[in-house]
Length: 408
Image (tube, rainbow, N blue to C red):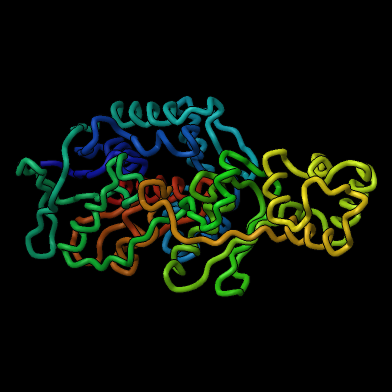
């Protein structure tokens, strides 16, 4: 008999386990993988964007749908407390662009190892390679869980922290939704979020691997501008990715199959149309006797130049001093409004988080306990709370886990 059984050894599960065990509770942590923290290891491209250095209200705003649900969790265990927590575990942190907080070592493995030491020192009993299939409940009370080998583990408190459906290779297969649904909980529609996007245009493939900084991308739905992001993006063999694209993807998934979706990329957003025109005229003046294809090196990355030339109506071998004002205007339009058509996403396999999940209305935000089943708790991505990129999702998971560990 345990005081708490935690299903899922990710950020929320490990935090809840250690906090509860440090309070003298007898805790069992069950993880289906052969190791703990498998998804943490791949976050931030293996560097682990732990949290964000902004105010708590700003964190809440970055959970666009159900951010208010996290008030109690974030004020109980804030981003500054999280930094202090890892600092005491020997993981020093640093702040980077966008107030993103990373370990100084740039190693997600250091984060996982610190969490493993934390729960081991606290006395948490850990069982790896153990997949839980069912929550045992009698009436409206939790009694324990049953694993895939039909073995039962007993406790009057069970935390489901198994993640969503994103990156299923890390163990997030969506089984948390099934367990919650079996006990009467509502699940909002599950979609991949913060996910690379597939595009229609063939020329995108020619730009594979090209990373652009200080550009802007605007999401256009059926001709209407919906949202704009400024920062960094990446062209891939299937379409587009990178921070600003991942942020826009959260809105894109709601329109797929229902509307025409385009992204307008401004390659020089820091310049007004007039300033860009003046800049282009200066370059054309400097390279007036050269061919068009040899005049854009100061303005664009070399990999992008053939594509821009191809999309323009200007012959590549035309002398710059022969380019007409109309042709220059068309080029300006390309530089400030390079459009791609979105036709899909790369799905759950490459999505950073899952949009949707267990309805927040059925969970007590002060404890993370189910309002339907006594002793049943949820934390992390399995709940219908997801944020933009920037360390917010991990912070949410740690805060929810801390709240559970403090509440049981």
